[in-house]
Image 1 (cartoon, helix red, strand yellow):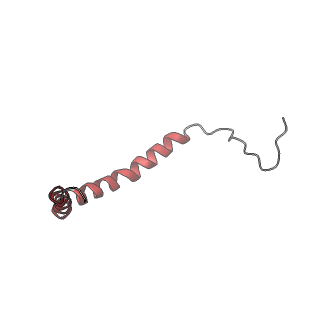
Image 2 (cartoon, helix red, strand yellow):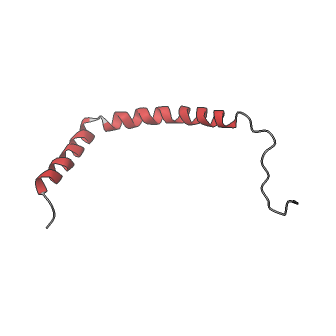
Image 3 (tube, helix red, strand yellow):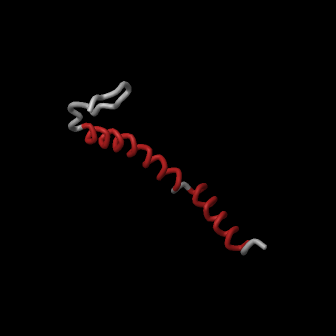
Length: 63
């Protein structure tokens, strides 16, 4: 079967490509997770979430 114009051909040798992608993703995700953890566990965010939950429980179902 002949390949037409614009057809996609797989790379000849892509060994290890997924390993480096996982490594780069982990390197990028670790500091982001640390920042998000710090923000979420901060007292302002915890109080805001608690306020939203208390308001929702006190308001009851919408009529």
